[in-house]
Image (cartoon, rainbow, N blue to C red; front, side, top):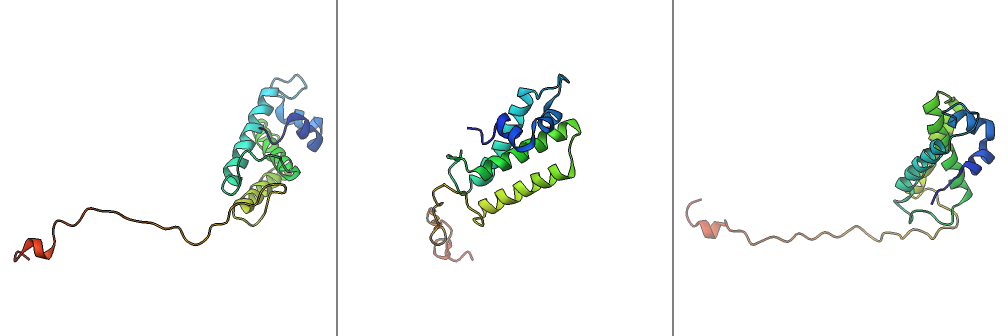
Length: 142
């Protein structure tokens, strides 16, 4: 499940910006494969971060997640063509910061069930065989 699409990218940035970032063959249209790879990359980044707290893929997709997926995808498409601007870099970094805030529990995804809270520290139990070398077993050697 993709968080954004060519249409949402076009709605967010305009056809000219998407074409500039994704037209590899110079035909004046965004290459579908380039867009698909960038969107898959964005989905992977999003899932790796919000998957710490939420079930992924996120469904239903909040509008903010679609917007940040677009920011991430456009950043990667633009970096490959030399069309990267400071604004695109800032939007990408803002998206990563927000996703990290979601993972840290400082931001939430609207429309998603609240992540389970952890009650208390995790318990650990160590099991081992009885010791062979003890003071009693070694007698007067020690």
